[in-house]
Image (cartoon, rainbow, N blue to C red):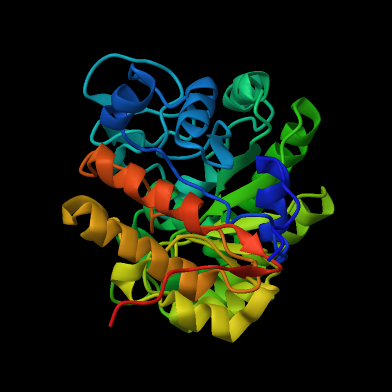
Length: 368
């Protein structure tokens, strides 16, 4: 059987995002581990950086590089001292985890705070440093994915917290609409500025709507207050000429149809532990939506044998890759608890069996 025409990483990744058949199933990851940095590239960095992200992607053979535009709440963009850190939104964090740090104080509680609040300047030059560093280092033609935050995450965890947002959903929904609208406008200015700074390929909107067991906010309020702003953000980015990935942890079955209708091209990470079944998603949406992920990074990548990891990788290829429109990855990120040998087991298996032959994969027989 004839193999599909060989593609570079960028072409491969964008072909799958469009729901088409590339030469091989692309690989994607958030490399969120200083320990794995040291193993794979020989050093660790205090901050997540564009050059280092490219180095990791090259070493692992990933097809895309993820970078964050400055203002992405929860990511530290400057080296500072001490246990606490205040970002440009006025959010106070405690250093816990890498590169995402934990917020401990939010600038907004209600309308009085909002009336005196000023969002930062989205066009400050430092916001594009990771992107520029990645573009300069990207000699192997990886797809470059720019990450921004979405409205649910920003309002529920960062500008407000989940408790104060919950009160305002009932007591002052107009305030929620105002903050959402302002944040979407801010993001679109940021996106447009990025599009003029350096060439890249895809936007990823990180906007966690779910927990492991269900939605963080009831569908009633998500549909009334958040779907329209999210759709405006997706539409604005698409008008700039970029495909859109939505990163959304957790069990989001109740809202997935609504999110697909906003026009997103792809959905990451299809969290297995939250019962987001890859096979069901592929059957329901076909190539209208490109799923990215579903390899279990809670148990199998952490505690499984190399054989377990190989079988998990083959399961995802069987369930997601038929007729293209699938990108393989863990169901969140590569983190400190994952042994390097299991990372290689999954990547090598995906590369060995992920080549399309006349639009099909030649996979080994499934074990009974």
